[in-house]
Image (tube, rainbow, N blue to C red; front, side, top):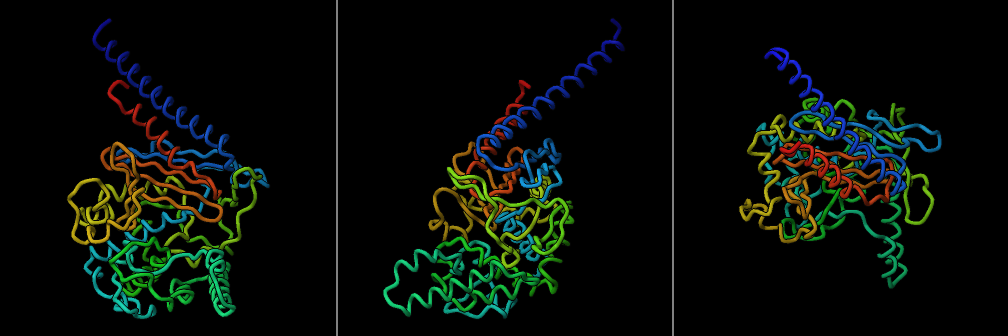
Length: 397
């Protein structure tokens, strides 16, 4: 065989091997997702994997609408739930990058609609869940502790007010603050940690005051478009949105049922978008590549998430208060018990469970979405997918 023929044969073999390896990766991930779908009872799963700037897996399994037998597809839109916090935090840091937002000024300089409290609250406090602003209340527990009719009436009044917000269609980010803006803080800002979607609602008011435009416009112009997130938009309960899933609830030992009624517009900055797994990968890749923020601010947002003892001064003051199962920085959480640093966010909401993970060391990102609340297998599925990609990336392959 001459050199030219050998070169052709070798090239064909290499291309065939690469194709076979790619197909094996596709089949392995598909098999893992299909097994989880069947074992867990979730209606559908949408999965995307990105590596070194490319999408290497993108598919959907199961039913987007069980009642009408509509299959899920890569274009199907799911609720982002709390993953929206990473996007909102990134928008805040973009304004910092532009010299418009000071993280340590009192928030009333940008959002006068939220009243001053006993202690000053800064944007940094909002971003890091250290503001003392409350989150959702377990009213059943509160009512069980009442000792007078007056106490019961007051708790029921607050319960009804909060419940009304979950059924109301809001078209702005300021009006929803009425439901809690006059409530006292849970602690002095900066002294403890309390995960607060309500704090991120206030953050959107701050961003509007800084940018001089709506939160929706800011996210679209500064985050979604630059990242190439063509399928992400606010979840409008009244609008006709193509490819939107139907939502469900999964209770252990019970049949699948429709999700609780929930208009998420009050919670838009903290978890009120529709998105796709590929859009979440596009965001993670753009964030990691420095396409949205300077390296300095990406570093700040992820400071304290690793096990390194080198932490920023602003992080060490409150890190001790974060639950040990995970660490949380500026709109980003890290995941425990991994060989490498994993960062990202999870989300749970009526009719939705979501997760996106970025492994910076490998430039690898994995996103999983489903149209059901009550599914606890998203992290274990991501770990399975990561192991498959790890094997595919090993020198032996």
